[in-house]
Length: 119
Image 1 (cartoon, rainbow, N blue to C red):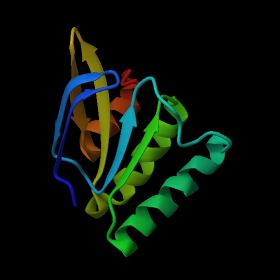
Image 2 (image 1 turned 60 degrees about the horizontal axis):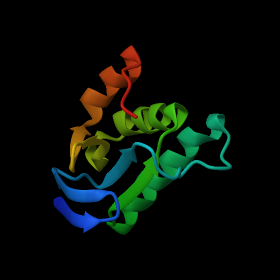
Image 3 (image 1 turned 120 degrees about the vertical axis):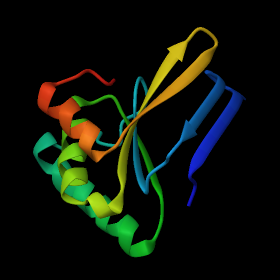
């Protein structure tokens, strides 16, 4: 599995470095959405299925969203499955660089509880 990712000079990314990748990674920002067409009440089941499949098949997952419902559903399932290592990655554009801010299960729990903007 990847533990870090570096992207240079690709589309909007002049330089992007992400360390500490998890098994299931949700990237938040202005991008496409994994949850398109999935009712928000069904999203926890979607994430539970993704976490279970990734663990069972020993694969790493990357998904994108800018939906608060998707983020809170991800957080709920990540908190229930800490051994499966879910990580939220917030991409921030700063001048000519893109920074990655990572939130593990415990940090994401605070983000969700306090409704801290991460998109």
